[in-house]
Length: 226
Image: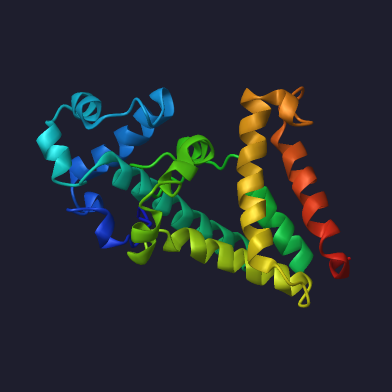
């Protein structure tokens, strides 16, 4: 029996739930592929419609604009990643080992989840690295925030922040460190592959080195964890 992973999405992100129809799933699948291939700036609903074999009007029935589609993709990824973090640390008792597992999940490319055949998580991970910040670095961020469009990212940061407090209950900045881990993992990966002189990992291009760097950064701030 094939098990499906269903992620509940904020209904303000879409006009029609894309996960409830074959066309909607194609929109998600092909938008990920096109954004990864050409970048978000060059991505249009016209190109998406041509790739799918439908009309622009058909896509606009699901998403009001491409920016909301990007927020949808990033929110889906954060929700999926929170599930992975919770699932893969569920049976780990040692808080240090648990936090190291989280760092590894954040800093390395994850395998595609066979339960979501319309989402390639490994490609979506690369989109998060290169395009993810564009979801909230906009003039409408406050309005979008009032609609709770960034809640999945906040929820993931809260989960990681609680794990940080497990390592050091007296640490004053758990959520700041949580967001730093996430963003630093992505920036270092991007720099490693595109602007290597900004990192110490440009020569070998090894994600494991980013993991070791983040572990050093995090646990230097959490001396009680040792």
